[in-house]
Image (cartoon, rainbow, N blue to C red; front, top):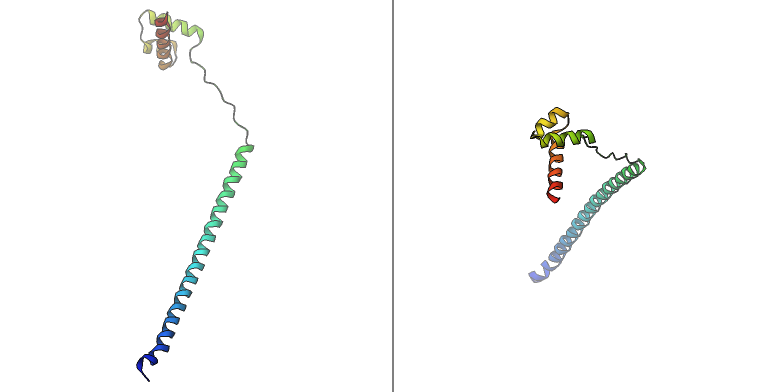
Amino acid sequence: MPMNELFLPVTAGAALAIGFGAVLLLFFSLKRELSRAGNRQVKIEEALETIDRRHRELAEKPEPPVETPRSGLSPGKRSQALEMHRRGQTPAEIAALLGVPRNEVELLVKVQRILLSKV
């Protein structure tokens, strides 16, 4: 019997074993990946449920009323501040004397300049 005929069943069996091993490897790899994907799916669903629950809580909660900020300058203080500015006092001095924020006085002076420049 020639040598090729003796090795043919052995090589065929080896190729079959290698193929079967590759199939098993792919099967278990796929099974592991499906398990990981399932775990990720569960985590995503839990996160979505948490977001949905929080959204419902916020939707049921009444909005707090919005308060419009009021100026620190009453009409009387405004006119006093403008008069003091006409006399040459600085916004810092006016703010200190009237007890109002300096930026309010500076804004009042800027607005007054704009209004006077348009007249």
